[in-house]
Amino acid sequence: MAPDSKSSNDLLIHNSLRSISYKRGSLQLLDQRKLPLETVYLDIQDATDGWNAIRDMVVRGVPAIAIAAAFSLAVEVANFKDFNGTSEEAASFIELKLEYLVSSRPTAVNLSDAAKKLIEITSNVASTSTMPESVFQAYIEAAEIMLDDDVASNKAIGSYGSRFLRDQQKIVPRFSVLTHCNTGSLATAGYGTALGVIRALHAEGVLERAYCTETRPFNQGSRLTAFELVHDKIPATLIADSAAAALMKESRVSAVIVGADRVAANGDTANKIGTYSLALCAMHHHIPFYVAAPLTSIDLYLSSGEEIVIEERSAKELLHSQGGLGEQVAASGILVWNPAFDVTPAYLITGCHY
Image (tube, rainbow, N blue to C red; front, side):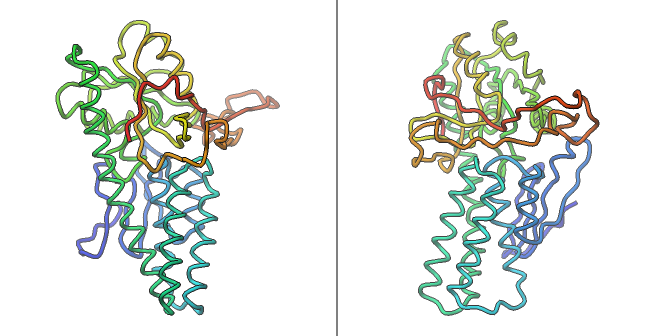
């Protein structure tokens, strides 16, 4: 298990599942690839470890990615024994490392947004201080503030989303909600975005049932969302990705709520592959389709979803079981197209909660 700390100078991400354990100078990430059967934490000692953990899906979910990346560099600079350089060189070091970390998941706007803010903070300190230690200290403190902000944002999204849903469907006494991928404690600093709304509905006694898709090929739904729902004793049912339309046809779904990796200025939303299909099915069956995401997921520099860079994952994730970690299941020699995300046009989205 990850170590605890009672020091007031330490920050520990406390949620029921503890996907990230951090105290100043130390970072451990829950290896989500091994869930739900094993609980293993990996030590992260520097930005390179952070980059690999993000790229290899040890940690995933855009809010958690941004925090893990920021903390991986915070741990590296906190453990510097001797930095032979000026404050400007310290700021340049941080900027280069953050640009490197952003390359691990280019579609995740939260990561690039966090990097820009952290670079600005350290650059400002470097312009007024001659001590590189001051730059590193400012970076560490700014990274730690990100954690508190994310938890507060998630809880606000959950509360507002639940209230909004009840206001929009007043004739519905209890709700059955379908969600996709994983948007809970494991994808954020704690509580979750779309899954946070489901948690809030459950806490208020108005959730009939949560449905989660398996979310192939990496199975974030069956491995992670189902794990969180069972852990929190929320009534839930797992479905195959291809069963969503049939579920809607049988009038078992009151609303669909998903997260977002990036939202363009016009409302087009990039999210885990399969989200677009769910939005089309929801529109056909006259079911409201909502996006729950933090403000940091909005990229006003992109006019539409056409400009969103879609990451393509390894062919191995489709050719082998367990999202590429198991035995081969597909024919040798077959070509693979494996985009990690798709873009849902704004006109298919009933509403967004930020």
